[in-house]
Image (cartoon, rainbow, N blue to C red; front, side, top):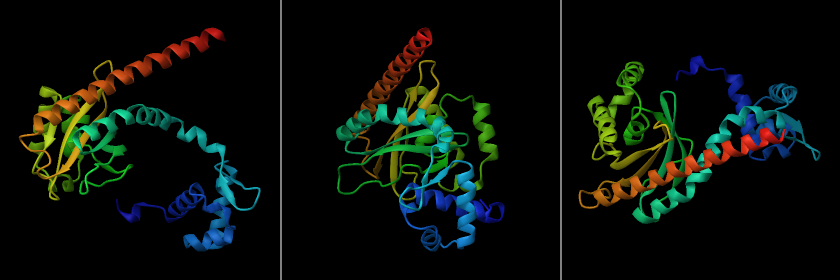
Length: 265
């Protein structure tokens, strides 16, 4: 994104929020401004503005901390947290079984977001981070997230995509993965990534068949070989089936609890 389309003052406010979230707000406002490279007057105005919105509040011992006014903003993310918490044990088992790094991704518009990772126990493996965002058109994980979408919908995303999306893969490779996933429930990306990373993904589906997440196993070139791929795909499919069952069970329990609370009122 072009820097000319961004607001520097907002970036500074974001830096302040990150600092408070990490606990660095215990220091004085002037010390915080120096650490962040922000003019003290600007830092003062940012903190006052955030305080007026009840996003931050003064600490008893000095400095500032995040405030409860942020809760309405993070409420939509609670569902993601619950999904991650519920599926983490199953992803850990899958990593133990395959000795491959594993990630859980969700779709947000035209992007995919990594919301959880389990690392390979091997000395060398694929690294990455939670919170990483990519085009939903890339990788086996993107194809898994698009597996339930009509072709015209996928074509509209392709039409609006930046040309850089196709630097690491041709568009035909995307369609191959989507159709592979629809046909067998699993899709792969082997020998395509310029850094030698191979992946295999499968969608986690809700009770209505819609895709709610994608589970991806990742390895270096050779980790996903023709010899071991059948076993890896079998374990992956077992994992996403277990994930889907767990999501359905948790949803049913939450619905029953909500009905119970409603009747008590």
